[in-house]
Structure formats: C-alpha cells, structure tokens
Length: 33
Image 1 (cartoon, rainbow, N blue to C red):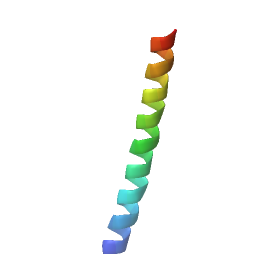
Image 2: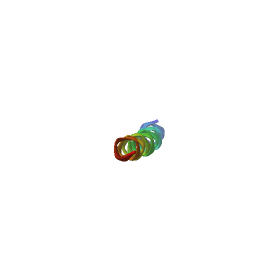
Image 3: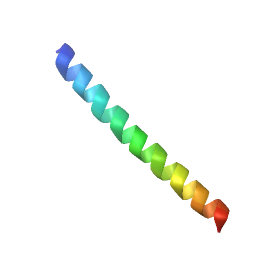
C-alpha cells in the first residue's frame, strides 16, 4: 500500500508540475504578445 501511495504521489506531482510549467510558458507568451 505504501508503494502504491508513493507511486500515485509521484504521478500526481508530475502532472501538476507539467501543468504548472505549461501555465508559466503560456503566461510568459501572452505577456510578450
């Protein structure tokens, strides 16, 4: 159970990180435009 929880945490953390980076990139592009 602990292993599954850790794996899920890494997956969710990765998704949040990817979305966060996408939002930052989109924000910077919109500011430049």
